[in-house]
Structure formats: structure tokens, C-alpha cells
Image (cartoon, rainbow, N blue to C red; front, side):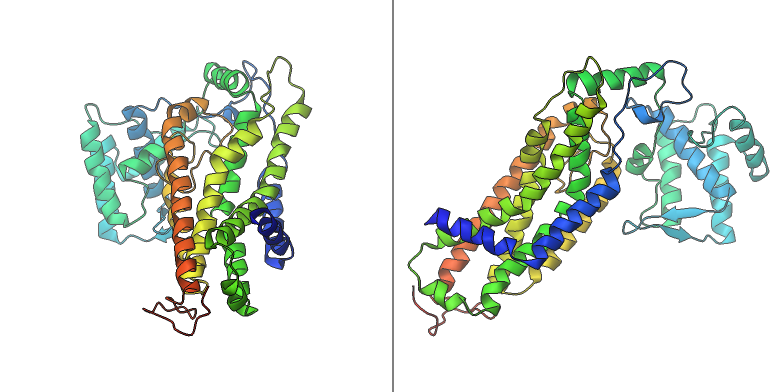
Amino acid sequence: MFITLFRKECAQTAKSLIYWLYVACLVLFFNSQLGNMHILTPPQEGQADYLDYGYQTDITEQDIMETGTGSLVWAHYYDNYFTYPVGFAKSVSLDGEEKEEIGDIIYDLTGLKPEDLEADIAAFFETHDIQTTQYEVKLKEGLTYDKFLSEMERVAEILGPGSGYTEEMLRANVQIPVDYEGAAANYRDLTEKDGLTGGYTRLFCDYMGVVLGILPVFVTATRMLRDKRSRMQELIYARRVPSGTVMGSRYLALVCMHMLPVVVLSVIPTVNCIRAGIEGVNLDYLAWLKYDLGWLLPMVMAVVSVGIFCTELTETALAVLVQAAWWFVSLMTGGTSMYGGRYGWNLVPRHNTELNYAGFEEGFRQLAANRIFYTVLALVLLALTILVYERKRKGHLRRNGKISGNHKSAVQA
């Protein structure tokens, strides 16, 4: 019975226009972000730059102070301040008193007066490429990290919520390109430890996770509401099929149908790595399967679970609003860990590079705990959905979006 219902649910999902819109969105997003995937070749000593080979990961407090202060000097000189209060850029205009206070902070950190800023910026870029290098400024001798953070807290208060001058954002904003030795080390990690395909499949998961954190809820809510619109609930309630079988087969079908196009797309990075024909690389041919199951599947399970639980409980599209809010918060909190290694408990973990295997390895236990948590959460929500469904079959819950103590008119199981 379970297999029969599973097949029927898959067929029903495949007939849905919303589902094919979901597939189209996945394909379009993949093509726009990864359609022209460039497979790295070994770095050459003496080449113009090594931007493609990542950034330094051993960031020091001195790096944070120099880069953070340089960012402040740059913004002050050009009178161009931005914050990101809800994830989108907002231009901030300061009054004369606030600009003067920022100037005093810069002087406390660097000893530079407003009239000295232009000369210092020009001198820095006489020896650095403005396209590839973050502006850094020489700090006052003896400046401590605690003093620096105290001054930056004042800047954050002046600019308001979402500024880039909190300690977390200051650290995240340091991007110092590696030199040849660093590029060679990163490339060895990519080819020897990651099997080349692992890095690109992880990058695939990063991008696709952004859309998989929201899109499945639309298909799920639509499928759950279809019975109500077609008045099939009374017929389903009357049948002697266990509630777990009905909801379990529907849930499994939704998860499988959502993962099917993802799995197909995930093979493309591996094919690109094979076609690159880089010699001496022991390719991991199954990286796509491991990352699909370990990284993306728990996310899809969680989103589908939110969809079926909220829709079954309320018989409305509330699930879309709930998931949209969760997705938005996840993207905003993940913005400070784009380079990977700090995954936390975010629904949408970020690792927006094919490199930084060291960060992935260091944060692997945290990521594994994260994915296990969302798998368990998904199963708990599924169990609650089955419970709600069973109560409705027995007439204890209304089917108009409100909960009641009893519903005598419901069809008894």
C-alpha cells in the first residue's frame, strides 16, 4: 500500500505546474551562477595575481585592524557609508557633527588628519593594485586590539544597525589574496584532499542551498491544499489506510521529487572536472552523491516538513510565510561566513568557494551536527503532521483552519 501511494503521490506532483516552475527555477539559477564553471589549473609562480586561489585564512588581529581602519578611512574620505540592516545596502548620510566624530576616531587610530587622507590613499595604491587589494592604513604605534574595537563600536553606533564595523563583520571583511605559496597549498588541498570534484560540488551545494531553502515550500503547500480545493478530504478520511502511510508516502514523494532535479544538476560539476583533463588528479567520482545526501537532503527534508505541517494544521498557505521568514534570517546570518568553515546551526550553511578545504575540515563536525539536527527536526515535524492528520480523521480538528475541541460532523475513520 505504501509503495502504491508513493507512486501516486510522485505522479500527482509531476502533474503540477508549480513543480515544473520549481524545476525551471533550479535550472535557471544553476545556469546563471554555475553555468560557466571555470575549473582551476595549477598556479604558476610569478603570474599577475592569485585571486582565483583564495584568501589567507590565518587572519591576525593586526590584519583586522589595518583592513577595518582602511575601510573606515576610505568611506570617510569619499563620504560614502553603507549599512546592511536587513541584508540590503543602505546609504547613510552623516551630519557635520557625526563626520567630525568619525574624523576624530580616524585620528585616534592612525594619527591622520582629514587633509592627510588623500595623500595616504594615493601613496598606498602607488605600490598596490586598486582592483585586487584592500586599502590598508598604517596604525598609530602601540594601538591595542581592545582600543581598536572600542573605537569601532563608536563607529557602529553612529552608522546604525547593519554596519560593517562590528568585530564579527570586521573579521569577515578581511580578504587578503594568497601569494604563490598559499595558492599552491590551496590547490594541493583541492586536488589531493578534495579530489577536485569535492570542492566544486561543495560550491554547487552553497549556491543551490540558497534556493532550496525556500522553493520546496511552494510545491509542498500547493500539494497539501489540493485535496481541500478538490474536496477529496472526506474521501481520504473515510478510507482505512493508516495516517502514517498516507502522510509518510506523501512526504517521501515530495522529498524525492524535489531532490531529483538537484541530483541531476549536481553531476554537472563532476563532468566538468573530468572534461578539464587535469593530469595527476585522483578524482572523487561520487562527491556529488555524498554532498547531495549529506548537505542538501536534510535542508529539503526540513523545508518540506515545515510545508506539510503548517499546511495540514491551518489549511492555509501559512507555511510559505513561515519558511520565507526562516529562509531570510538564514541568508542574513550566513552572510558573515560566506567563505566557509563557520557553519553554526544555520539552515543554509555557506561555503561560497571551491577552496578552503582546511576550513571545511575544521568545521566538519559542526556541519555534521547541523545536518543531523535538521534531519531529526524534519522527522519530528512529520510525526506531528501525522498526529494532526489522525486527529482530523477522528473529527477532533476542524478543517477550516481553526482548531476546535471536537468536530462531530467529520467523517469517522
